[in-house]
Image 1 (tube, one colour):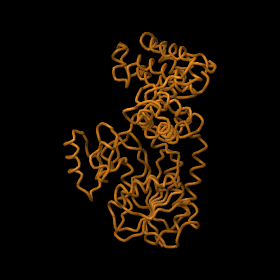
Image 2 (cartoon, rainbow, N blue to C red; image 1 turned 135 degrees about the horizontal axis):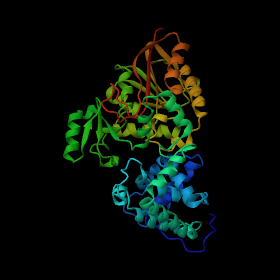
Image 3 (cartoon, rainbow, N blue to C red; image 1 turned 180 degrees about the horizontal axis):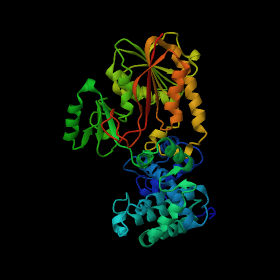
Image 4 (cartoon, helix red, strand yellow; image 1 turned 180 degrees about the vertical axis):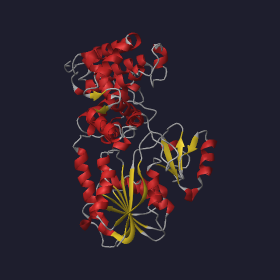
Length: 475
Protein backbone atom coordinates (compact mmCIF):
# COMPACT_ATOMS: atom_id res chain seq x y z
CA UNK A 1 0.00 0.00 0.00
CA UNK A 2 1.30 3.48 -0.89
CA UNK A 3 0.28 6.31 1.41
CA UNK A 4 0.07 9.96 0.39
CA UNK A 5 1.05 12.77 2.75
CA UNK A 6 -1.87 13.77 4.95
CA UNK A 7 -2.90 17.39 5.47
CA UNK A 8 -4.22 16.47 8.93
CA UNK A 9 -2.49 17.92 11.97
CA UNK A 10 -0.27 15.25 13.52
CA UNK A 11 -1.25 13.89 16.90
CA UNK A 12 1.14 14.74 19.76
CA UNK A 13 2.00 11.57 21.63
CA UNK A 14 2.71 11.43 25.34
CA UNK A 15 6.29 10.29 25.86
CA UNK A 16 5.25 7.52 28.25
CA UNK A 17 2.51 6.14 25.99
CA UNK A 18 2.68 2.83 24.16
CA UNK A 19 2.01 4.71 20.91
CA UNK A 20 5.18 6.80 21.40
CA UNK A 21 7.23 3.65 22.09
CA UNK A 22 5.73 1.81 19.09
CA UNK A 23 6.66 4.64 16.76
CA UNK A 24 10.17 4.92 18.20
CA UNK A 25 10.69 1.16 17.91
CA UNK A 26 9.44 1.27 14.30
CA UNK A 27 12.06 3.90 13.46
CA UNK A 28 14.79 1.82 15.13
CA UNK A 29 13.73 -1.32 13.23
CA UNK A 30 13.60 0.61 9.97
CA UNK A 31 17.20 1.58 10.62
CA UNK A 32 18.23 -2.03 11.27
CA UNK A 33 16.53 -3.06 8.03
CA UNK A 34 18.84 -0.61 6.22
CA UNK A 35 22.01 -1.70 8.07
CA UNK A 36 22.02 0.49 11.18
CA UNK A 37 22.71 -1.11 14.56
CA UNK A 38 20.13 -1.27 17.31
CA UNK A 39 22.47 0.71 19.55
CA UNK A 40 22.81 3.55 17.06
CA UNK A 41 19.06 3.64 16.47
CA UNK A 42 18.37 3.91 20.20
CA UNK A 43 20.98 6.67 20.50
CA UNK A 44 19.14 8.62 17.78
CA UNK A 45 15.82 8.14 19.59
CA UNK A 46 17.36 9.32 22.85
CA UNK A 47 18.75 12.44 21.18
CA UNK A 48 15.40 13.16 19.50
CA UNK A 49 13.51 12.74 22.76
CA UNK A 50 15.89 15.12 24.53
CA UNK A 51 15.40 17.76 21.84
CA UNK A 52 11.66 17.57 21.38
CA UNK A 53 10.03 16.93 24.74
CA UNK A 54 6.87 17.75 22.81
CA UNK A 55 4.66 15.92 25.25
CA UNK A 56 4.91 15.32 29.00
CA UNK A 57 6.44 12.09 30.23
CA UNK A 58 6.82 10.57 33.66
CA UNK A 59 9.58 8.18 32.65
CA UNK A 60 12.41 7.68 30.18
CA UNK A 61 10.77 6.25 27.02
CA UNK A 62 13.99 4.74 25.65
CA UNK A 63 13.70 1.63 27.80
CA UNK A 64 10.26 0.88 26.36
CA UNK A 65 11.46 1.60 22.81
CA UNK A 66 14.41 -0.73 23.34
CA UNK A 67 12.17 -3.53 24.64
CA UNK A 68 9.73 -3.23 21.74
CA UNK A 69 12.44 -3.01 19.08
CA UNK A 70 14.36 -5.97 20.50
CA UNK A 71 11.18 -8.03 20.66
CA UNK A 72 10.35 -7.16 17.04
CA UNK A 73 13.86 -8.08 15.87
CA UNK A 74 13.63 -11.46 17.59
CA UNK A 75 10.26 -12.13 15.93
CA UNK A 76 10.79 -10.34 12.63
CA UNK A 77 10.76 -13.50 10.53
CA UNK A 78 7.31 -14.51 11.74
CA UNK A 79 5.98 -10.95 11.70
CA UNK A 80 7.11 -10.43 8.09
CA UNK A 81 5.39 -13.61 6.99
CA UNK A 82 2.13 -12.70 8.71
CA UNK A 83 2.21 -9.15 7.37
CA UNK A 84 2.69 -10.43 3.81
CA UNK A 85 -0.32 -12.73 4.25
CA UNK A 86 -2.51 -9.98 5.66
CA UNK A 87 -1.47 -7.11 3.38
CA UNK A 88 -0.75 -9.02 0.17
CA UNK A 89 2.32 -6.87 -0.48
CA UNK A 90 5.00 -4.98 1.42
CA UNK A 91 3.37 -1.80 2.80
CA UNK A 92 4.92 1.53 1.92
CA UNK A 93 6.50 3.72 3.20
CA UNK A 94 9.02 1.60 5.14
CA UNK A 95 8.04 3.20 8.45
CA UNK A 96 4.49 1.91 8.01
CA UNK A 97 5.78 -1.61 7.46
CA UNK A 98 7.94 -1.42 10.59
CA UNK A 99 5.10 -0.01 12.71
CA UNK A 100 3.02 -3.03 11.71
CA UNK A 101 5.91 -5.46 12.29
CA UNK A 102 6.55 -4.06 15.79
CA UNK A 103 2.84 -4.32 16.57
CA UNK A 104 2.49 -7.86 15.17
CA UNK A 105 5.54 -8.94 17.20
CA UNK A 106 3.62 -8.04 20.36
CA UNK A 107 0.92 -10.63 19.68
CA UNK A 108 2.63 -13.29 17.55
CA UNK A 109 3.56 -15.42 20.57
CA UNK A 110 -0.11 -16.36 20.80
CA UNK A 111 0.60 -18.50 17.71
CA UNK A 112 3.39 -20.51 19.28
CA UNK A 113 2.71 -24.12 18.25
CA UNK A 114 3.70 -25.27 21.73
CA UNK A 115 0.35 -24.05 23.01
CA UNK A 116 -2.16 -26.93 23.38
CA UNK A 117 -4.57 -27.08 20.46
CA UNK A 118 -7.51 -26.44 22.77
CA UNK A 119 -5.95 -23.40 24.50
CA UNK A 120 -8.36 -20.48 24.39
CA UNK A 121 -7.55 -17.08 22.92
CA UNK A 122 -7.74 -15.57 26.39
CA UNK A 123 -5.23 -18.10 27.74
CA UNK A 124 -2.79 -17.56 24.89
CA UNK A 125 -2.76 -13.77 25.23
CA UNK A 126 -2.78 -13.59 29.03
CA UNK A 127 1.02 -13.40 29.28
CA UNK A 128 1.58 -11.00 26.39
CA UNK A 129 3.17 -7.69 27.43
CA UNK A 130 0.08 -5.69 26.35
CA UNK A 131 -3.55 -6.56 25.78
CA UNK A 132 -3.93 -7.19 22.00
CA UNK A 133 -6.63 -4.60 21.45
CA UNK A 134 -4.55 -2.03 23.32
CA UNK A 135 -1.81 -2.71 20.79
CA UNK A 136 -4.25 -2.05 17.93
CA UNK A 137 -5.49 1.20 19.48
CA UNK A 138 -2.00 2.51 20.22
CA UNK A 139 -0.65 1.54 16.80
CA UNK A 140 -3.41 3.60 15.20
CA UNK A 141 -2.54 6.53 17.47
CA UNK A 142 1.12 6.15 16.49
CA UNK A 143 0.22 6.32 12.79
CA UNK A 144 -1.73 9.54 13.28
CA UNK A 145 1.37 11.22 14.80
CA UNK A 146 3.29 11.07 11.51
CA UNK A 147 2.02 13.02 8.48
CA UNK A 148 3.13 10.37 5.98
CA UNK A 149 1.29 7.66 7.93
CA UNK A 150 -1.83 9.48 9.05
CA UNK A 151 -3.96 8.39 6.09
CA UNK A 152 -2.92 4.79 6.73
CA UNK A 153 -4.50 4.65 10.20
CA UNK A 154 -7.50 2.75 8.81
CA UNK A 155 -5.14 0.31 7.10
CA UNK A 156 -3.21 -0.23 10.36
CA UNK A 157 -6.46 -0.83 12.21
CA UNK A 158 -7.74 -3.28 9.60
CA UNK A 159 -4.50 -5.31 9.39
CA UNK A 160 -4.12 -5.71 13.14
CA UNK A 161 -7.79 -6.45 13.83
CA UNK A 162 -7.81 -9.06 11.08
CA UNK A 163 -4.75 -10.64 12.66
CA UNK A 164 -6.42 -10.78 16.07
CA UNK A 165 -9.55 -12.28 14.54
CA UNK A 166 -7.48 -14.98 12.84
CA UNK A 167 -5.41 -15.63 15.96
CA UNK A 168 -8.63 -16.17 17.88
CA UNK A 169 -10.45 -18.27 15.26
CA UNK A 170 -8.04 -19.60 12.62
CA UNK A 171 -4.87 -20.23 14.59
CA UNK A 172 -4.05 -23.56 12.91
CA UNK A 173 -4.11 -21.93 9.47
CA UNK A 174 -1.72 -19.18 10.57
CA UNK A 175 0.70 -21.70 12.07
CA UNK A 176 0.60 -23.60 8.78
CA UNK A 177 1.47 -20.37 6.93
CA UNK A 178 4.43 -19.78 9.25
CA UNK A 179 5.70 -23.33 8.88
CA UNK A 180 5.47 -23.08 5.11
CA UNK A 181 7.69 -19.98 5.04
CA UNK A 182 10.83 -21.66 6.35
CA UNK A 183 12.54 -21.98 2.99
CA UNK A 184 13.81 -18.39 3.10
CA UNK A 185 13.59 -17.05 6.65
CA UNK A 186 13.10 -19.47 9.53
CA UNK A 187 9.91 -17.79 10.70
CA UNK A 188 9.63 -19.60 13.98
CA UNK A 189 13.29 -19.44 14.94
CA UNK A 190 13.94 -15.89 13.72
CA UNK A 191 17.27 -16.69 12.06
CA UNK A 192 18.42 -16.55 8.44
CA UNK A 193 18.63 -19.94 6.76
CA UNK A 194 22.41 -19.82 6.27
CA UNK A 195 22.84 -19.28 10.00
CA UNK A 196 20.77 -22.33 10.86
CA UNK A 197 22.54 -24.52 8.30
CA UNK A 198 25.89 -23.69 9.90
CA UNK A 199 24.60 -24.39 13.40
CA UNK A 200 23.18 -27.76 12.37
CA UNK A 201 26.44 -28.75 10.72
CA UNK A 202 28.63 -27.63 13.63
CA UNK A 203 26.45 -28.90 16.50
CA UNK A 204 24.18 -31.75 15.34
CA UNK A 205 23.26 -32.61 18.93
CA UNK A 206 23.03 -29.09 20.40
CA UNK A 207 21.87 -26.73 17.65
CA UNK A 208 18.25 -26.62 18.85
CA UNK A 209 19.36 -25.58 22.34
CA UNK A 210 21.47 -22.80 20.81
CA UNK A 211 18.45 -21.57 18.83
CA UNK A 212 16.14 -21.68 21.85
CA UNK A 213 18.67 -19.61 23.78
CA UNK A 214 18.84 -17.07 20.94
CA UNK A 215 15.05 -16.66 21.03
CA UNK A 216 14.94 -16.12 24.79
CA UNK A 217 15.35 -12.93 26.75
CA UNK A 218 18.81 -12.64 28.32
CA UNK A 219 19.14 -12.93 32.09
CA UNK A 220 20.46 -10.11 34.24
CA UNK A 221 23.75 -11.44 35.59
CA UNK A 222 25.93 -9.37 37.89
CA UNK A 223 29.59 -9.54 38.78
CA UNK A 224 30.07 -8.81 42.47
CA UNK A 225 33.06 -6.63 43.31
CA UNK A 226 34.46 -8.66 46.20
CA UNK A 227 36.72 -5.75 47.15
CA UNK A 228 33.52 -4.16 48.49
CA UNK A 229 31.96 -7.24 50.05
CA UNK A 230 31.37 -10.94 49.54
CA UNK A 231 28.88 -12.54 47.16
CA UNK A 232 26.87 -13.83 50.14
CA UNK A 233 26.71 -10.33 51.59
CA UNK A 234 25.37 -8.96 48.32
CA UNK A 235 22.78 -11.74 48.03
CA UNK A 236 21.61 -10.78 51.49
CA UNK A 237 21.41 -7.13 50.41
CA UNK A 238 19.29 -8.12 47.41
CA UNK A 239 17.00 -10.16 49.68
CA UNK A 240 16.54 -7.13 51.92
CA UNK A 241 15.37 -5.20 48.83
CA UNK A 242 13.01 -8.06 47.86
CA UNK A 243 15.07 -8.86 44.74
CA UNK A 244 15.29 -12.66 44.28
CA UNK A 245 18.68 -13.82 42.99
CA UNK A 246 20.94 -16.87 42.91
CA UNK A 247 24.67 -17.45 42.67
CA UNK A 248 25.79 -18.86 39.30
CA UNK A 249 29.57 -18.49 39.48
CA UNK A 250 32.46 -17.58 41.78
CA UNK A 251 31.40 -13.92 41.79
CA UNK A 252 28.33 -14.16 39.51
CA UNK A 253 24.77 -13.50 40.65
CA UNK A 254 21.69 -14.00 38.48
CA UNK A 255 18.79 -11.67 39.24
CA UNK A 256 15.50 -13.52 38.77
CA UNK A 257 13.67 -10.59 37.15
CA UNK A 258 15.66 -8.17 34.95
CA UNK A 259 15.40 -4.53 35.98
CA UNK A 260 17.07 -1.18 35.30
CA UNK A 261 20.54 -1.11 36.82
CA UNK A 262 19.61 2.03 38.75
CA UNK A 263 17.40 -0.14 40.95
CA UNK A 264 20.23 -2.47 41.93
CA UNK A 265 21.61 -1.67 45.37
CA UNK A 266 25.22 -0.60 45.20
CA UNK A 267 25.42 -0.36 41.42
CA UNK A 268 26.34 3.32 41.30
CA UNK A 269 29.03 2.84 43.95
CA UNK A 270 30.65 0.00 42.01
CA UNK A 271 29.57 -2.88 44.21
CA UNK A 272 28.31 -4.81 41.18
CA UNK A 273 28.55 -4.66 37.40
CA UNK A 274 26.49 -6.28 34.67
CA UNK A 275 28.44 -9.11 33.03
CA UNK A 276 27.35 -12.49 31.70
CA UNK A 277 28.51 -15.55 33.62
CA UNK A 278 30.52 -16.82 30.63
CA UNK A 279 32.35 -13.51 30.20
CA UNK A 280 33.34 -13.64 33.87
CA UNK A 281 35.64 -16.59 33.12
CA UNK A 282 38.15 -14.43 31.24
CA UNK A 283 39.87 -12.61 34.10
CA UNK A 284 40.59 -15.69 36.26
CA UNK A 285 41.93 -17.62 33.24
CA UNK A 286 44.71 -15.05 32.76
CA UNK A 287 46.19 -15.93 36.17
CA UNK A 288 47.35 -12.36 36.77
CA UNK A 289 49.79 -11.53 39.57
CA UNK A 290 50.44 -8.20 41.34
CA UNK A 291 52.67 -5.82 39.43
CA UNK A 292 52.17 -7.44 36.04
CA UNK A 293 51.69 -5.44 32.87
CA UNK A 294 48.40 -6.50 31.26
CA UNK A 295 46.87 -5.59 27.90
CA UNK A 296 43.12 -5.80 27.37
CA UNK A 297 42.88 -5.51 23.59
CA UNK A 298 39.51 -4.63 21.99
CA UNK A 299 38.52 -3.63 25.53
CA UNK A 300 35.22 -1.78 25.08
CA UNK A 301 32.82 -1.61 26.83
CA UNK A 302 35.17 -2.53 29.67
CA UNK A 303 33.58 -5.43 31.52
CA UNK A 304 36.70 -7.59 31.42
CA UNK A 305 38.96 -4.61 32.18
CA UNK A 306 36.92 -3.86 35.29
CA UNK A 307 36.98 -7.48 36.39
CA UNK A 308 40.78 -7.65 36.03
CA UNK A 309 41.28 -4.51 38.10
CA UNK A 310 38.77 -5.54 40.77
CA UNK A 311 40.66 -8.77 41.32
CA UNK A 312 44.16 -7.38 40.74
CA UNK A 313 44.18 -3.64 41.52
CA UNK A 314 48.02 -3.46 41.58
CA UNK A 315 48.55 -4.37 37.93
CA UNK A 316 49.61 -1.98 35.16
CA UNK A 317 46.58 -2.36 32.89
CA UNK A 318 46.33 -0.97 29.35
CA UNK A 319 42.83 -0.93 27.82
CA UNK A 320 42.99 -0.67 24.04
CA UNK A 321 40.19 -0.08 21.55
CA UNK A 322 40.02 1.28 18.02
CA UNK A 323 36.74 3.12 18.65
CA UNK A 324 37.20 6.33 20.64
CA UNK A 325 33.52 6.57 21.57
CA UNK A 326 33.40 2.98 22.80
CA UNK A 327 36.61 3.53 24.75
CA UNK A 328 34.82 6.36 26.54
CA UNK A 329 32.44 3.72 27.91
CA UNK A 330 35.43 1.92 29.41
CA UNK A 331 36.34 5.16 31.17
CA UNK A 332 32.79 5.56 32.47
CA UNK A 333 32.70 2.01 33.81
CA UNK A 334 36.11 2.33 35.49
CA UNK A 335 35.12 5.67 37.03
CA UNK A 336 32.03 4.06 38.54
CA UNK A 337 34.18 1.25 39.92
CA UNK A 338 36.80 3.77 41.16
CA UNK A 339 39.51 1.97 39.23
CA UNK A 340 42.20 3.20 36.85
CA UNK A 341 43.78 1.93 33.66
CA UNK A 342 45.76 3.45 30.80
CA UNK A 343 43.25 3.94 27.98
CA UNK A 344 44.67 3.86 24.45
CA UNK A 345 42.88 4.46 21.14
CA UNK A 346 44.41 2.19 18.54
CA UNK A 347 44.02 -0.74 16.17
CA UNK A 348 45.13 -3.96 17.86
CA UNK A 349 46.32 -5.21 14.46
CA UNK A 350 48.68 -2.22 14.10
CA UNK A 351 50.69 -2.03 17.36
CA UNK A 352 53.36 0.11 15.71
CA UNK A 353 50.97 3.04 15.95
CA UNK A 354 50.33 2.83 19.71
CA UNK A 355 52.69 0.40 21.50
CA UNK A 356 55.39 1.99 23.67
CA UNK A 357 57.79 -0.93 23.26
CA UNK A 358 57.33 -2.35 26.76
CA UNK A 359 56.18 -5.99 26.59
CA UNK A 360 53.19 -7.37 28.46
CA UNK A 361 52.99 -10.25 30.93
CA UNK A 362 49.38 -11.02 30.04
CA UNK A 363 47.31 -10.23 26.95
CA UNK A 364 43.56 -10.61 26.61
CA UNK A 365 42.43 -10.55 22.97
CA UNK A 366 38.65 -10.45 22.74
CA UNK A 367 38.67 -10.27 18.96
CA UNK A 368 36.00 -9.01 16.55
CA UNK A 369 33.58 -11.67 15.28
CA UNK A 370 29.98 -12.10 14.13
CA UNK A 371 28.86 -12.03 17.80
CA UNK A 372 26.73 -15.08 17.02
CA UNK A 373 26.98 -16.21 20.65
CA UNK A 374 25.25 -13.13 22.08
CA UNK A 375 22.16 -12.94 19.85
CA UNK A 376 19.74 -12.70 22.74
CA UNK A 377 21.49 -9.55 23.98
CA UNK A 378 21.89 -8.06 20.50
CA UNK A 379 18.91 -9.25 18.41
CA UNK A 380 19.82 -6.96 15.51
CA UNK A 381 22.94 -9.04 14.77
CA UNK A 382 21.00 -11.79 12.99
CA UNK A 383 19.68 -9.25 10.47
CA UNK A 384 22.89 -7.24 10.05
CA UNK A 385 25.32 -10.11 9.47
CA UNK A 386 25.94 -11.79 6.14
CA UNK A 387 27.48 -15.22 5.65
CA UNK A 388 30.56 -13.67 4.07
CA UNK A 389 31.24 -11.77 7.31
CA UNK A 390 32.56 -14.96 8.92
CA UNK A 391 35.59 -15.19 6.63
CA UNK A 392 36.17 -11.42 6.69
CA UNK A 393 36.07 -11.14 10.48
CA UNK A 394 38.12 -14.31 10.94
CA UNK A 395 40.89 -12.83 8.82
CA UNK A 396 40.79 -9.62 10.87
CA UNK A 397 40.99 -11.64 14.09
CA UNK A 398 44.01 -13.52 12.70
CA UNK A 399 45.78 -10.23 11.97
CA UNK A 400 45.10 -9.04 15.54
CA UNK A 401 46.35 -12.17 17.29
CA UNK A 402 49.47 -12.39 15.11
CA UNK A 403 50.24 -8.71 15.73
CA UNK A 404 49.80 -8.98 19.52
CA UNK A 405 51.76 -12.19 20.08
CA UNK A 406 55.21 -10.50 19.71
CA UNK A 407 54.20 -8.01 22.43
CA UNK A 408 54.09 -10.79 25.05
CA UNK A 409 56.99 -11.56 27.40
CA UNK A 410 58.43 -15.10 27.37
CA UNK A 411 56.51 -17.05 30.01
CA UNK A 412 53.55 -14.72 29.54
CA UNK A 413 49.97 -15.86 28.90
CA UNK A 414 47.72 -14.96 25.99
CA UNK A 415 43.95 -15.45 26.14
CA UNK A 416 42.02 -15.60 22.85
CA UNK A 417 38.29 -14.91 23.25
CA UNK A 418 35.38 -14.63 20.84
CA UNK A 419 31.65 -14.28 21.43
CA UNK A 420 30.90 -16.54 18.45
CA UNK A 421 29.50 -20.06 18.18
CA UNK A 422 30.75 -20.54 14.61
CA UNK A 423 33.84 -22.84 14.68
CA UNK A 424 35.47 -20.86 11.86
CA UNK A 425 35.75 -17.93 14.28
CA UNK A 426 36.56 -19.92 17.41
CA UNK A 427 38.07 -23.42 17.52
CA UNK A 428 39.43 -23.28 13.97
CA UNK A 429 41.03 -19.91 14.69
CA UNK A 430 42.59 -21.21 17.91
CA UNK A 431 44.06 -24.28 16.20
CA UNK A 432 45.42 -22.21 13.32
CA UNK A 433 47.03 -19.75 15.75
CA UNK A 434 48.83 -22.55 17.58
CA UNK A 435 50.03 -23.96 14.24
CA UNK A 436 51.41 -20.57 13.14
CA UNK A 437 53.22 -20.01 16.44
CA UNK A 438 55.27 -23.04 17.53
CA UNK A 439 56.35 -21.14 20.66
CA UNK A 440 52.72 -21.07 21.85
CA UNK A 441 52.01 -23.75 24.44
CA UNK A 442 48.30 -24.57 24.55
CA UNK A 443 46.98 -24.48 28.14
CA UNK A 444 43.70 -25.90 29.51
CA UNK A 445 40.72 -23.61 28.93
CA UNK A 446 36.92 -23.96 28.65
CA UNK A 447 36.92 -23.94 24.84
CA UNK A 448 33.48 -23.43 23.28
CA UNK A 449 30.61 -22.53 25.62
CA UNK A 450 27.24 -23.03 23.96
CA UNK A 451 24.11 -21.21 25.16
CA UNK A 452 21.65 -23.68 26.61
CA UNK A 453 24.30 -26.32 27.35
CA UNK A 454 25.67 -26.94 30.84
CA UNK A 455 29.42 -26.50 31.11
CA UNK A 456 31.53 -27.43 34.14
CA UNK A 457 32.92 -23.90 34.20
CA UNK A 458 29.52 -22.31 34.92
CA UNK A 459 26.72 -23.31 37.26
CA UNK A 460 23.97 -22.50 34.76
CA UNK A 461 22.95 -23.19 31.16
CA UNK A 462 21.66 -19.62 30.88
CA UNK A 463 24.85 -18.02 29.58
CA UNK A 464 26.20 -16.49 26.38
CA UNK A 465 28.10 -18.41 23.73
CA UNK A 466 31.79 -17.59 24.18
CA UNK A 467 34.99 -19.37 23.19
CA UNK A 468 38.28 -19.34 25.14
CA UNK A 469 41.76 -20.52 24.16
CA UNK A 470 44.76 -19.95 26.45
CA UNK A 471 48.44 -20.03 25.46
CA UNK A 472 51.78 -19.58 27.20
CA UNK A 473 54.76 -18.12 25.35
CA UNK A 474 57.62 -20.60 25.71
CA UNK A 475 60.46 -18.35 24.52
